[in-house]
Image (cartoon, rainbow, N blue to C red; front, side):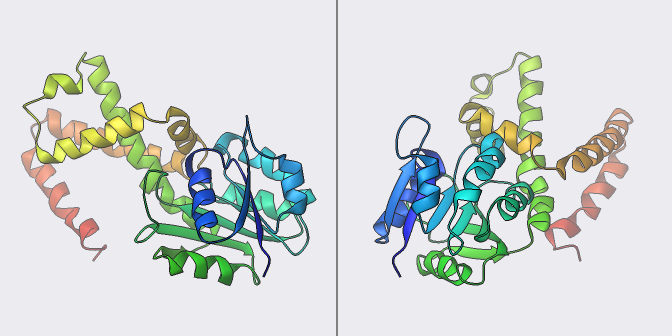
Length: 259
């Protein structure tokens, strides 16, 4: 099959990673970026597969722009960290097949082997087997699920997780405390957390701002977070060791898979 792949947003980040990956697999790949590369409208009309890899805040408008120009037998796919919005937009804008794809790794990895990738097919009877086979052939771990379920779970994995990191950084800032001040005092567990803080707070602020504002399921979790924090605050102020011990003991079931 003669497959021509166009990646809109393929000159940097995850888009470039996939451009390099697909080129190594022998496919003809053309990229489009904000400052270089081909014209997105032309790529949409001439490519067999179009991958949207632009920042999350412009994903929908990009899909609505290029979707109508796609060939009917082609594949339109996105690499966004949320899936409900882009899959709905792709299904609405294009007549071709549609797959929502979320690679759960950054562009710094050397290989896709062992990496998690979530697929949320919209309509993909023809193209889904090809894409799955390509990724699994290089060792990726594939999970398929509906877009809504993806976003519900990712509200914890990325949303609440990064919110916790952001909160820790804000508290340290208000106490005029830096990671440098803690040098020589940290535990291995805190060192791991500090590495996460440095990546979240010092790497790509726009990405994490989008992760915390673009997932419709996160607001409910933030309310629960606030509610539970209030309960813990009462226990800590009251020196309620037994209450906290009860919470910690009960939460062992989270690690045991809910049993």
